[in-house]
Image (cartoon, rainbow, N blue to C red; front, side):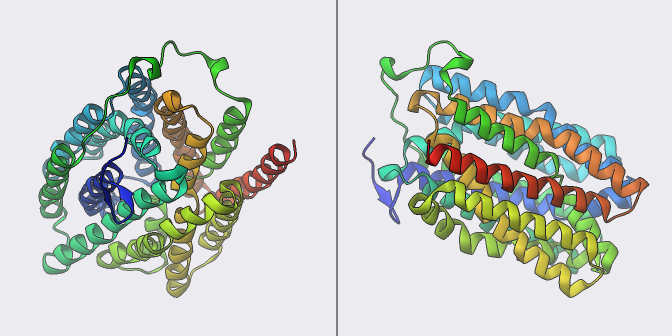
Amino acid sequence: MQQKRIFGFNRNIFYTGLTSFLTDVSTKMVYSIMPMFLLSIGASKTTLSAIEGIAESTAATLKALSGFWSDKIGKNKPFMILGYGISAIAMPFYAFVWSPIQVLYLRFIERTGKGIRTAPRDSLIAGYAINGDTGKSFGLQKMMDNAGAIVGPLIAFGLLYAFPRDYHGVFLLAGIPAILGIFVLIFGIKEVKKSKEHLLGKFRFKDYSKKYYLFLGIIFLFTLGNSTDALLMVKANEVGVKVVYIPLVYLIMSIVSVALAIPLGTLSDKIGKERILIFGYLVYAIVYFGFGATSSISMIAGLFALYGLYSAATDGIQKALISDLLDSNKQGTGLGIYNALLGITLLPASIIAGLLYDHINSAVPFYFGAGTATLSAILMAGFYHHFKFK
């Protein structure tokens, strides 16, 4: 397990982050303009939300299966190559779609790639974390993800500024960084195969702790109010942010998340991941309440900055806490179940939000999300105190 360190991180963790950076440049080039593209070809808010929910949920079971299989064979890299490869190949084909149903097909294929790679990738990060610094290691992953989410929208903005509403041109170019990421993955990661006695046997629910399942319950509740970010971009547009500037608004969130992901991850290793998650859920509640109440462009910019703080305080730290609750030979499976839960829950969450947006008003889905986040923070506080003093 002793390998060369790069900037204080195990080489496998660093190159995994670099692969994620390049892939996120591609996906965020597409994702930052996809809501506006879908609306331009006749999709409703409900359709937009449903596409995201269906694509994530239908591929969600693969996250658990790939995690379990990577534990069985003691290897993560093959699943990562296959998963990132599928997404990279699918990306440029968005340039040839003209209807929402075609977008759904491609989103399903692309998310299938994510479903295959996610749990094995997270298991690799947990397994190579130095001195148990899982929060810091997942913080690097989150930082690299969001660094890609800065570069991707900037490229999309530049292309749309030069060629207004040429969505298909942006989609065509989006595959290039993802393909570069495959080469980084193939040549950068050198995985050590686990010995047979450390491989996972059969899956049994009783092998996972009560604490693990209770935490998954809190995650389910929170995710039920955490619908697709596409609605945030739609709301920004309705408040008055022009389409060409939507990628830049989304960029604010990514910059804040990049700046804070590693510091908050490192802090979580010191003071407890539960405390940081409570804080993150409360920030999310404030952000979503603000999106429901505001009609100010300047307020939208501030809310996206706070959304970056929430992202840095939750996404990677949730995975770090999950990995801390699992034995090393069960991390792929346990993280796979966690990621599958997120994907499956996104479908009802997105449909609920889309229906509320279309049939009541634009504020209600955000108030709903603020409510579930507040309740999740309360339950997380109870979770922390129960197991701390037990």
